[in-house]
Length: 109
Length: 115
Image (tube, rainbow over all chains, first blue to last red; front, side, top):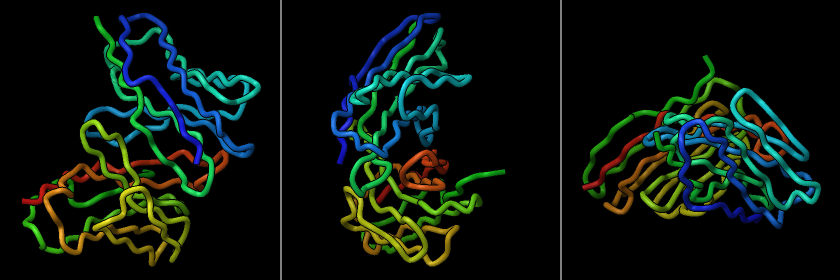
């Protein structure tokens, strides 16, 4: 089972770009990297998914290097409403959609 | 509207009284799963189902049962609830469990208290 490692917490000021890096050394060839956002007492919400290189949507960008052993979620110009827990998933093995403890992002005014 | 619906949203029960938390999705998803979330422990997977009549244990299955008799429903059953099962529970579904179609949709959550 692929293990993902993320920082436990991060702080940022409003308006800054935030980069959260996740390592997944044992990622399998067929696995995709997916990021979710969770607010307190709500279910996680899909943010972005990628396989390699760069993926961008209206919310975030995802950078994946050629070796795919890590990925970086980039949130441009964060606001207070981006304060949440962010989860990185990289599936490997037979147990799907396993969430770790995530990264708690606190955005400060 | 595409959604995952859990019921009830809140439940207070007593030790040993059997209960069922229902989960239903209207997206024709094959994959469904249950999680519990406790402070400091993140989301832990209880059971998952790859398709109808196919269920597997997640990381913390003890004290729980599930069934998948039809594609849209995946109920979580606590035969004899205990206080250590007090938690926030989430049901999720996705088109697939691996590959590019794994965007998971989550229910609103069920806050269970066992006294």
